Every structure is written in structure tokens, then in C-alpha cells.
Image 1 (cartoon, rainbow, N blue to C red):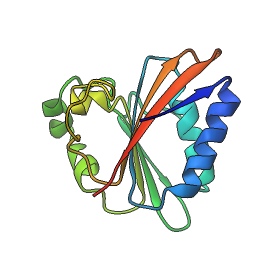
Image 2 (cartoon, rainbow, N blue to C red):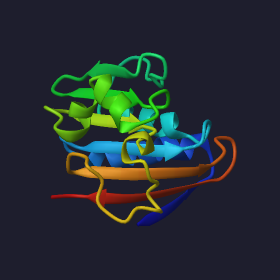
Image 3 (cartoon, rainbow, N blue to C red):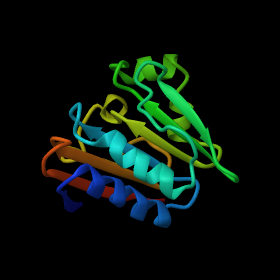
Image 4 (cartoon, helix red, strand yellow):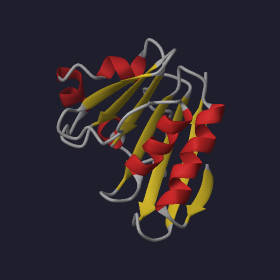
Length: 153
């Protein structure tokens, strides 16, 4: 696992921009962290790096937003209101986690699917690879710790 310290929302956004350059289409990105930790700020940076136009906001009430680019879609999901893998299956979202067709899939509250945290895991999650699992701790307005690990086939 790699640990990064971000000291502001702008730094978190910039981290997303940097990561977008190294993530080809096909990646699944899973995010965990408390409300206000900076998950959506990181997603905004990733989306900007992938040339997503328009407003990027957490899809908490819609569960999923699809954003188009010139070449690939970005699927942005929020599992906060779904408390178990069964609920995610019932909502029709599991297929995006296990076999996305193209583009990128970003999932806020991925721990609703994995049922464990990145730091507590003992096995590789049942998610399409390549997969970047990111845990953000702290407050959006203050220093936050960003821990991540990549899983590849």
C-alpha cells in the first residue's frame, strides 16, 4: 500500500489529475472514506484528467452517473445507500464492478461491496482488474491521508 498526504482540496484534485494520466480505459477505482473526506474531489480530478466536460458530483441519490468523453465513458457510482452486496446486485450495479465494458468505473463507498476496508482486507476483492482501491481519512478542509493499492491480473 502507498500513503500520500494531501493538505487541501486542490492537492486532492491534482492527485486525481496525475492518476488519470496513468489509468488507461478499463480501470475500476474504489473509494472509501467518511462523508466530507474528499472522495468526490478526487473523482473531479480524475474526470478532468480524462477530459470529462460538465459537472461532476457524487451520485448519492441516483446511484450512478454516466459521463461521456470523446472516446470512453466514465461510470461514477455511489453505493452509500446500498448496505450489502445483495442490494448492489438488486440495483443492477454489480456488473459494472465485475466486468465493465469500456471506459472507467469509479465507485464511492466500495466497502459496501467488499464488506471490508482496504487496511483490513485479507484477500483480493471481487472486482474487475485493474482495480485501484483508495481509502481517504481526514477532513476535506484539513490534512487527509490517502492510502491506495493497485490490483492487476
